[in-house]
Length: 353
Image (spheres, rainbow, N blue to C red):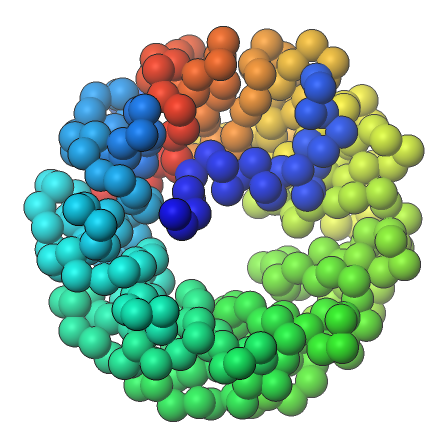
C-alpha cells in the first residue's frame, strides 16, 4: 500500500533529527475553531476532532490529512477519491493513487503514471510522468522523467529540465534543494545555481535564512549564500523552531542552540525534537530521558512529565499525540488527556474552516 501520512511519518523525521538515541528509552482546547485529525483504528482510517469525537467514520482503507482547500484523499473499494470535512465525497474515487492538495493541486496516479488535478477534480496535467511531487509556493512541482528530476508549471510546462538525481519543492525564499552527483545544493527559480552541490544533506532554507546541512558526517547550518553560519560540529541536528532554537546532538546527548550557535538548553536529553507553536505562542518541544518522553519549554523547564512511550510535536490546536501503554491518544499543553489512547495512529490536527 502507500504511505501513512500521520504518526508514522513523524517517526521517520524524529529518528533522523533527534530521537534515534532514544529508541530504547495552560491551555484547554476550548477553541471556537474545529480541528480534525486523521486516525487509524484497526485496519481502517477515519477522522476525530479536538475533543476526541469521531467526526468521519472509520471506513476507509487509506486516507490523508485535510489539505488547505478542505479536502482529504481517501481509499474506498480500491480507488482513491477526495472527501470534504463533512465526509461527503467531493471527487469520486477513480484514481489508483491519490495525494494531498498543495496550493490547489493534487498529484494522482493512473496505470503507473502520474498527473495533477485541481480542487474540482479536473485533470490539469495528464498522467504521463513517472512521478510528480508536491507543488511549491511558486506554483512549480517536481517531476520525474526516467531516473532524473526537474520542475513543471501547473500547466504542465517543463520549466526546469529533468537533470537532477533528487529535487524538492521551491520554498517562499525562491530556492529549492537538488542533488547532483550524490551531493545536495540549491537552485534559483530560473534553474541557476544558488548553493553548490557539496553537502551530504541539505534542508530547506528556513524563514530565518538558515538551512540545516551535513558535511563530512557532521551537522551545521548555512545561509542563502552557502556561507557556514554555525560550524559543522554536531552528531545530528534539526531545523530551527519558531522560537529560534534548534535541537542538536553532541557526544550522544541532545540539547538546544540559538541562531548564533550558543547553547540555550543544556545537553541533558537522550533525544529531542524541534520546538513547535502549540498556539498563543506557547512553544514546547518533545524530548526524551531514560524514563520516557515528555515536553520542555523554551527555557528548558519540564512542562509535561517524561512518562510516555513516544511523543510528537504539538499542533496549533494545542494538542500532541502520545503513546500510552501501546496505544496512541492526545494531550493538551497542561498534560491532560483529551483523546483517550485507543488508536493505532493519530495524525496532526488541522484547522477546519
